[in-house]
Image (cartoon, rainbow over all chains, first blue to last red; front, side, top):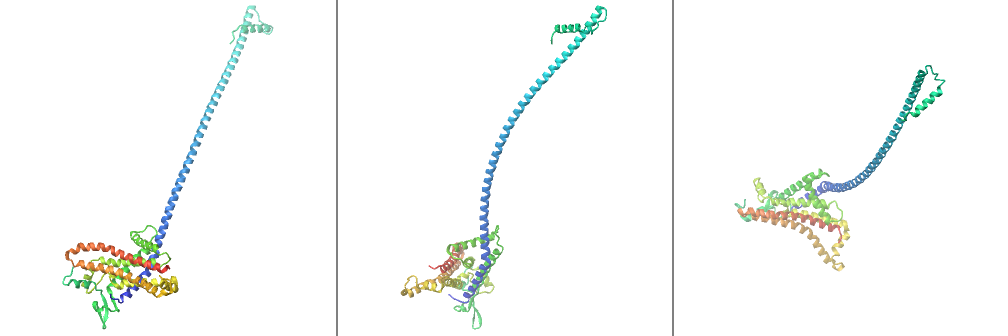
Length: 163
Length: 268
């Protein structure tokens, strides 16, 4: 055991190294470590929050989807109903239109028939007058015998088959 | 490179001799001539202690200056593991607030570890190189020099005294020394002797534990080096075991420093 100046030299060296460590090594390192720890803790918390939010969003999306599905079903049903109504309406319209057309055609036929009959009667009357003139040998005054002719025409009409 | 040309005793004595430099009668002297003189310097101890201290401050300082909060590099991670380990040890033992204790513990732990690690360099290499360069003695493990371990232990002891007085006041510290363990005025001399011995035992045990372990380890390496070819497996086995001692002693030195300083902070 030889104590000598090394004792003092080593003491000074130790003071200097410890001072250096206290001043320049320990604070930045421990700060970096603590900051990183905080960052990691924050990151983990943020990740958990994100996961929770994702779950919430998924849940929300599910309910929105459900609602949309319901609404679509409603719209579908409504459309079905409406189209049924439209078809029924169109059918009804078509039927009534058809009936109207038939009725119109029928009246037209009737008028044409009546017209034709009228013309025919007039022609028959004219023929009858001409025939009678020929038989009588002279002119028959149509005006003077109008009553007779009309009666003839009426007779013809009565005997002619209806239709 | 065992004791060729020397006897075993000479070999061991030579390897355990510090490169002590002093002035004898106005002329520089080296080695044995300086035994027992206070105005002498163990140049080898100082050199390796300073070199390893500078390595430590350079490496840690470099990492600390470039320390990033983001993803750290491998070196920074390794350094941070050491720092985190020391920080945890300090937190578990010392509950006050101090800007000194943690850096002190870190410096002591790493520095003592590095100095102890010098023991794992094969015992003949550096002395042989030094011998080639004309340096007659070289002890490469600073912690096998009692001056080095005592210097550190005494510094810690002075800090213990300083904090004892600072935290408890001179009155409180005196009371602690005189009124424990028997709280009666009659027992004051007895208490003083008891507490004084336990107080003084702290630096002595702190330094001698480290010194003794490393000195003994070094001595066993030297003895193994005398065994010829059989030294190779034995060296390996002892080095593996010594790795444990080296780390453990550095840890114990740091831990006891923390414990002593936390005792100084807390009144019991």
